[in-house]
Image 1 (cartoon, rainbow, N blue to C red):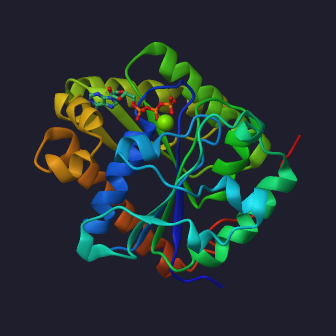
Image 2 (image 1 turned 45 degrees about the vertical axis):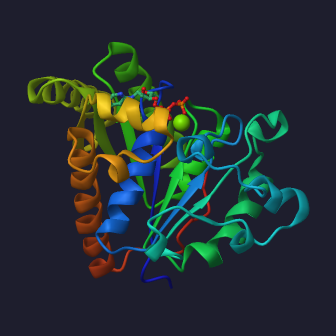
Length: 274
Ligand SMILES: Nc1ncnc2c1ncn2[C@@H]1O[C@H](COP(=O)(O)OP(=O)(O)OP(=O)(O)O)[C@@H](O)[C@H]1O
Ligand SMILES: [Mg+2]
């Protein structure tokens, strides 16, 4: 039994809401808290974690399936140089249409090959594509927790509700934590979360937990342009501080889960209820 690793996926109904940037910066923040962190780019069709980091890796997560590469040989450390081996990326190759959708067998094979590596880390984060495709649902069901990124836009809210509904009904998972991103005020955060949680409670019978807000921050746009994590270039900026809050909450959740001993393999097998 694995007594160490918590995995979480970062997902959203609507695209372009900030998943990849939050994944990157929350992982960076967890590492600053002293944790060993593995970030996996699971947006196999339109991967872009390499772009956010300004790197051009030679090997990619798809090579595990194509040529049976050892996942450990694909790792790219991306933290401060002193942190080698404790903040690592498994990058994916973008534009490989045949990998945009993986079937159950391929996802299961990937999971089995990733688990031994994943269990060396305290946290494993999967950055997942938007929407409700079988690949999105399959990957996000593998993780211990799911962080759903929403923005105050009504379309983001309705799409996130649809995602939570399908995941809870078909994959029997309920551990959802909401991040309200790109907010201008606390009242906007409150309103956005209350709307989503009310509709979930009414139609699904449960409410997702609130994880944190992430403020709208020009610094993040600048970090994307510079191809560096915001946590590295502006750690005191509003969105960076919010990512640290997210990391601290995840650290608490990890401690709680370790105490009750509920964690099995870092990435678990998925039961689909049709
Ligand atoms: N807190 C924020 N403040 C300002 N801009 C933001 C913030 N979060 C996200 N953005 C903007 O949104 C853009 C898209 O972010 P990102 O690529 O992380 O989204 P995504 O959800 O991963 O997209 P996709 O669904 O295509 O994978 C960023 O490049 C940035 O311009
Ligand atoms: Mg993304």
